[in-house]
Image (cartoon, rainbow, N blue to C red; front, side, top):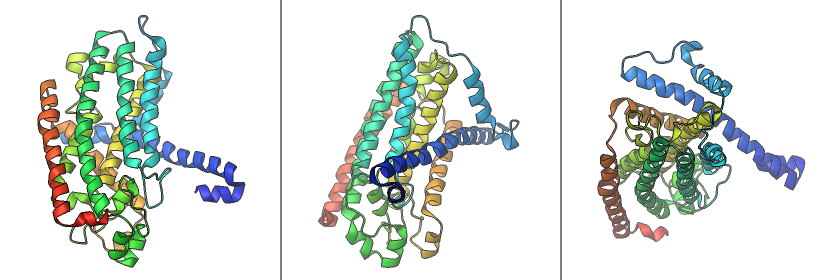
Length: 376
């Protein structure tokens, strides 16, 4: 898209306008998707519990999220008298902004990413790590015990599970380094490789597009996803559960447990400041769905390396896989009871951390013994 604008408007103006167009092309559908995913979340929850869910505002209740947003927009923004006003209002803006900027490196299809940088995975890890600051700031600036406790819980929880996510990412990078690059794309069939968009792709193991291309034919030369690899299935489970904890989703929604902390770090927020927290939360959930799709489900690639499946645009495969992951997240919310906080910490530090570290050793050892590191 950017070269198209540059050819029409010149190098510098074209680059600027093309970049802005890319940002809008990602941001506007993302915000619309957030509204729709709130509806899907409530519908899945209702279906599992044999209820109807939203069904009044608009056909099938599809406009319920927009009605809720309008209601929040019309409410008054109330700042507690004892709060630090600047930090109090800055916190939701930080949460929302960080939730959006992370999407810059997500490849929705071959060569369809705003910034297809060679360290995209590290960029995502860094941005997601910064997300905790918005929650800590909101808890402290509210000058109230419930938000403060919610902010502390969230900080401890997000840091704990980021460690496990880091080791999961190491295993994926090892596989990407062993199988990615030009040689992999050419060796697995010229026509299909060309359709997948992976021929001649760079071999940077931290590049998200490279990670997707490395999954092409990764199992038996036919299946296009790390989730089909028996060695990576445990890592997929750890990543999925850690993503729930990272985004404060049930059964790990301890920072906003209504039975203990009313609404946690969001207690004192109202109107659009509260709406920004909600938008940021669901944008982060969708980001984790996209990351799960890129790391384990083959990104824009079809599940099977079969020519007719490549006739379906890669973007549709990507969106479909993201939707599947989100439905699983919504189903967990309806089926699994909330953990106690000591159970949450024990799962992160005493189960996931040693298991993911052990799996890094197992996978790296297997890659060395099988000679796959010759591609590095």
